[in-house]
Amino acid sequence: CRALHLLPACTRTSRLRFSHAYKLSYSNQFRSFTVAPNIGIVVSKHGGPEVLEVKEIEYPSAKAGQVIVKNEFMGLNFIDTYFREGKYAHPLPFVLGKEAAGTVVGVGEGVTRWSQGDRVAYFLNANGAQARFTAVPSDELVLVPEKISLKQAASVMLQGMTVHYLATDSFRISQGNTVLIHAIAGGTGLLLSQVCKFMGATVIGTCSSERKAELAKTIGHADHVINYSTQDFVAEVKRLTDSKGVDVVYDGVGKATFLKSLDCLKPRGLMVLFGAASGFPDPLDLNVLNAKGSLFVTRPKLNDYVATPEERERRATEVLQWIEDEQVVIGNITEFDITQAADAHRALEGRQTTGKVVLRFSDSSE
Image 1: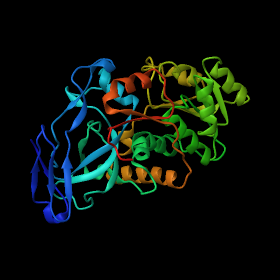
Image 2 (image 1 turned 90 degrees about the horizontal axis):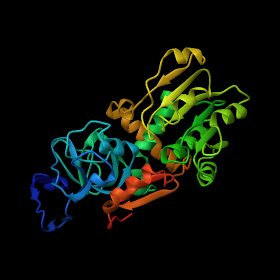
Image 3 (image 1 turned 90 degrees about the vertical axis):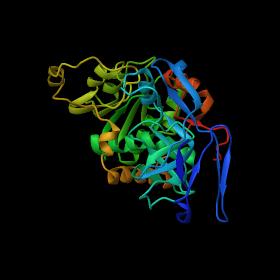
């Protein structure tokens, strides 16, 4: 068993050792704390959803500068499928997960900002969020405002901060821009569409069904939605822009849309490839960019846009503020119990979901 520093400050020097077989409780006249088994989603070999193991794992210990979070909701993202498949390297075995929200139950030495019971959310540079308890570097946490539920907070850490850098750094959206967003009815797409709209852009989106198109209009406030199952999105974009093209394409789909998307850009337009849900695009001959109008291409990742604790906190805080101010609405959060992790992966990869997918524990309180 490992040891956990318990709060409040008067008890930080005490340690509680956990048993895997039983629930133990610690109490004094101020606090009580019950420890449940630490259940996590483990990848021991690469492959499809069937390789996921939901099982009891070792309890984390709070090292110096770390906080122990009892997770209630954990976001599921395409990047989790890339790690599961081995497209992104990670030593085996490991616990999946980049984002979650819950409450602080312990701290390590040197941590003064966080206290037991604080409602927090986080995006990890590493993996490990999809477990009941996770040790998180204290500077990767953000406080969740009371008006925002833990489920909402867990759903916007990765995708919300991704949207933030896409709309403010990769390409700074301003009044009068026209943008194309692929997979607009997904979690990132719906958020990005709303942000582009309140920043003054005209939004064109693509999706695969009429039901998703309706969500893109009602939740994402998209101006135009193209069903690429029945329409040629290049021809539609040219029609909608009077053949001028768009300023920027935001593409999280990848192989299926990348090359055709270059034909949607105006001269000197920007292609932002931020994901590869359909697979990684083939290598690109840079002369193609010249021939199609001196185009630009970027392949960003979130870690490089939260490179310092200050930048991470600024982005996360602004995203949560957008939600508090109702500039952004989180719609269509699909929940799966942690024991249904494989089903959640199948639904996400099979494009059976809209909006955000989150995992939860059966006794999650919010």
